[in-house]
Image (cartoon, rainbow, N blue to C red; front, side, top):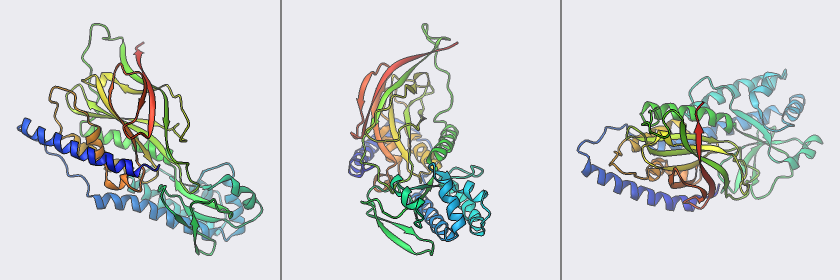
Length: 385
């Protein structure tokens, strides 16, 4: 998503607000909690770059393996219905080229999971798909395809694709190529699900989303809890270019928990596939029984393939743990935004939009602060059985 200029402006405000908040709290609080140092910016950028490098390597190896006509036909048939895990194609293939590729793909899946902070044992992450449906007739007619690694950078002017001889071809991103192109990318839906588990576990370990019993009230004790429900949502974006891989959206809800500590809850939004489309999810966004005050903030983010969820959780925790409850609600969006690596505000579209001071009784259309999206919400009471 092409939000770079807006992000940089928002980040400047976020950092200034966070510094002012931290300065005020340094005076108000005699003891500042010790926090772990956030990973250096260079390390975070390297983690994202590592994913792209691995994808490029696999794209080239896949391209050279397609010199085998029989294997090339298997790939064409396997990817006919859309994106398919690379490992599932190589697992069922007898061609020597496919068997050699299988080891490369397995190692690449492991390296990508590590770079994204997802740990081991996740299984296949890399997948392959035809870049554009218009390429199918040429592919079926026997035109030898190129293979490229998908990119999350909307501003890329060119991308590199490889042929069966391993030669690099520079493709103009402004036009869909006439020659078929396979895209190699990360299964962002699978990565997001695993990433949310990592994010929640790390935040819980830091005490930022541990279950805390809400104080009972005369009207709701034992009866249920109030929530904010997303009735409709739309995200604005430039038209998704042909060379981009899949992306998945998720929200981070922040506020002060019942224990007075900053709290972060993650909410997956896998249905947000296309810009300019209004979705009606009827999805619970905020469980107000988790929060001390009648206000919370929301940050909408997107994983285009290289988000490191463990680093994200650690960066957020390092900032939020320095903020103490002063007996009144303090917006935490700025702290979350300031914790994000600078690279996420330039070429990498991880940040989408944010909403400040969402209340339990909020209803109707709410525009995002960065003007990249809106959502319509309503209060909703979740009845206990």
